[in-house]
Length: 142
Image (cartoon, rainbow, N blue to C red; front, side):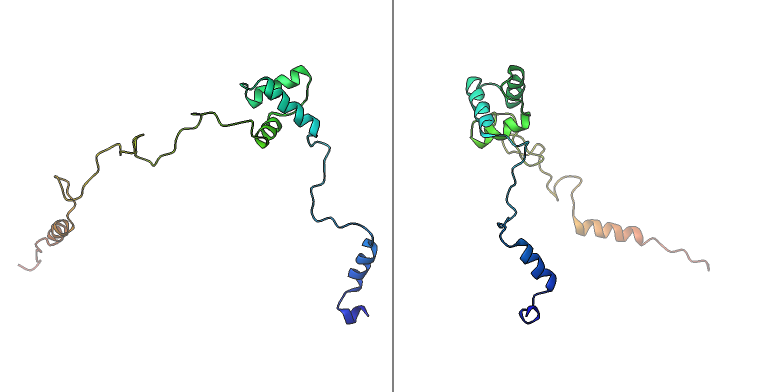
């Protein structure tokens, strides 16, 4: 019958052993080192007491006070998840293209081809190069 259904015997045996167990669709399995809800609440409450302190300092202040023992990265994750931690203004320089100042102008004057003593003129340069290559030939037989 299995052959008629197109199912291998080993597959049927696996199905029969699994009969009655719930499906696990790659769900997140809770680990012991994950933060619990009461720890997250303590972090948020401590941040409300000291709103001007950074997340790293908060982590070590909570450790010294014996409130919760969490890493600074965990404090950062909890506070950003609830929207309590905002980026400080002016901590990151603004991005601009190379060669431009803050006003968007270029640092140096632009080079214009064809103007000035070092002008790029392809036809003139090509003629000059051809003239250099056309040196008078000296024959051996004089």
